[in-house]
Length: 258
Ligand code: CAA
Image 1 (cartoon, rainbow, N blue to C red):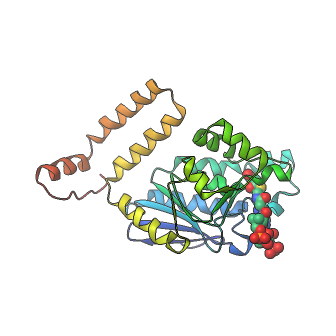
Image 2: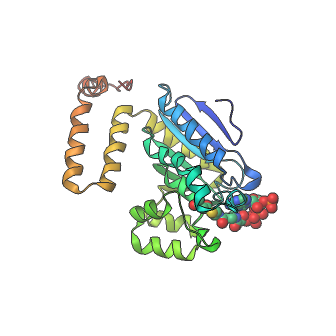
Image 3: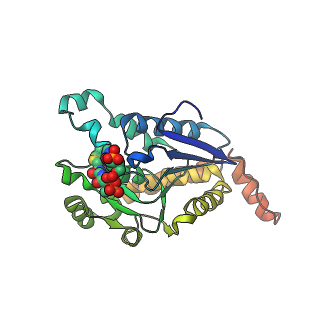
């Protein structure tokens, strides 16, 4: 995908990779960069040949957070008029699986970006942190909400109030990431996992993501009604016919995402 200044994109088979490309600043996220990331993600979400999106960063770190220089002179009215979080809101609308492959520092807005991914694979030595408190502010791109829903109020408050660095091991223990791999194997292992997902029926993945996301916000009964509708919906797909026919015929299914 051409025309981006702060990211690079590639597609290998059915996996789209978006790389943050501002490594001299440890991939500090300026506003244009966030706009580019979500724009690329939306395009890949709409491309039939892409089944999984991988988000990662060039250089030694995933991202050291929002670009501090860019926001030093902001005031509440300039921020309101800028409406920068409209871009962030769009991450929740991506339907395909997003795997974050993270390493080095995953700080502030970089941590919030990682939390927009569905699954996270971290290189050993990765450190997560919300350092905003040390700058006299707090997360503004969903950090307090997403981390609390993931790990609960007690740890969330501790991490957000102190800004302490959270090791990959602690992140794994609290269910914040899916696995830890050797740094040199980060992309290889992420692509292996992404390939596994890419072989699954895309509509099932899509409606499972939709249902699991509802579980975060809905009470159990309403969530189960929602799940049921998605379950019924999949019986309108060709892939449901293919999956069940392949089982009966004792062969591998060939899913088309239709
Ligand atoms: N914004 C702008 N530039 C940043 C940056 C950031 N968040 N993080 C790092 N950089 C720049 C540094 O200024 C430095 O640039 P120069 O070479 O031009 O001086 C370059 O990246 C490399 O950084 P360091 O030399 O500091 O590297 P280090 O290994 O010594 O330290 C670090 C790494 C501990 C992550 C340190 O860079 C740091 O503390 N960065 C700031 C982290 C932070 O506070 N992030 C939160 C931002 S606020 C936020 O994200 C709010 C929100 O929710 C919207």
